[in-house]
Image (cartoon, rainbow over all chains, first blue to last red; front, side, top):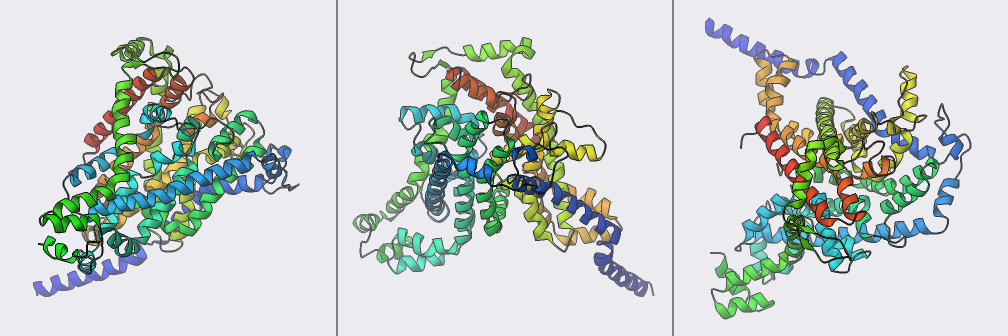
Length: 297
Length: 322
């Protein structure tokens, strides 16, 4: 009797919890509140971008109008035309592109190589290199900007692309990400390749790399983004108008035109839009990269 | 075990290390080590020079008087540290300590704000079924956009007659002169940074929430706990490691704020009235405007130690096991 009632009670409880799982956890008013909040945060996240994008097509008077207009009343391409006049901006874009592409290509290659050695080869000193990799990720990089600058200065690389590219061409975080992805692959893969007489390099290049394509994509995109967005280091090592990357160029431009908001907003679009386009195409990899870095804690 | 078939396999000596393996028999391991270090060569070179060496060099620099192109470096010992700590006595007149005080307040509010906001976003997203991917993408936009573009946009939105004050006026709040008012310039930067960094940490929390075994939550519900208690007593304690990670990374990031202050502070040097002067702005100015690289390095070292201590204290406070 007692047993039966206990059983029914248990099954009743199971039933209510099963039933509760859906309707109660997604209880209507709570659900509505959640979506209202999400809609509000969509407005706060997206609003500034959309508002500045449409405002970059407004004349200066309208950009400063109060109350503000949402859509341009007198739409114009003048801001963009003004920016591109004289070719300085095209040069900044070109420099930024060289920097970002070089860093992306070199970093993905070198960090994959380092990640391969650290995750799939046995050699003395491996743990030391790995521990140093983890440790230096916690060093706040700007704290080292001054000695880094002096090293570049004594190498006579100031105001060259090399000064931008070399320190970023293989990044500890990317190496860490590669190790995380590669260490899970089965050992047999390589052993059979080695039995067939493939060298270490060919095993790496033909067997391992194709298997970690998501990691390669993530590292490529994240390092492109990092270089494209970099400001502090570029500001230190670049000192002529023909070498400025877009962020540094925008800073110089801002110092000269600090009240011409229509131009500043149009300029910021050059900096923001390429990465946003990449993000829309490859968003999975951006987010995987961020999660990968969460693992290190 | 694995080395035996390998040395047979490398009988056609394709690579230098293959040849070495044949010649030395047990040299397979040496070959493997050489190969590994060849793979690691670019990384070790860059890591060695631009991270490890540079960190040590920076500490060494702080003991010298260094100016580029004028005099040879001169050993001054701990003079710069003594000078900086002596300034603590009249900290409100010392640019360095003003900047440290600014950044401490800034970090305090930004870290609390971004952690809370990131957790809120993650919990909201974790509890919906529809449009999850859409919202995650939208929330992540500020995190991928460059701080330079964001600074330029907010420079405009924060103008006295700008978008933010317009929205405030709609709900009847008279907006301040954000970036021109010493009382509001730093808070303006705080709000901007909470806005732009929360999404990254939201992703961390989402990952942590997904790792919580559902049986645990169901067990608590079966025991009659309501949603709030399940969250408070089960979910939140399990999120502790993620909270520590977010707080630690947030602190390290916030202490280094530079781009936004450089773009948005009046005069680009921490105005108005030094209310947005950050340690990095001060270090940058000391080194590249005043040509005092040793002095600036001493400031960097102090900044580093302060960040390190903060991280350790947080670890103790949040009490992460293991």
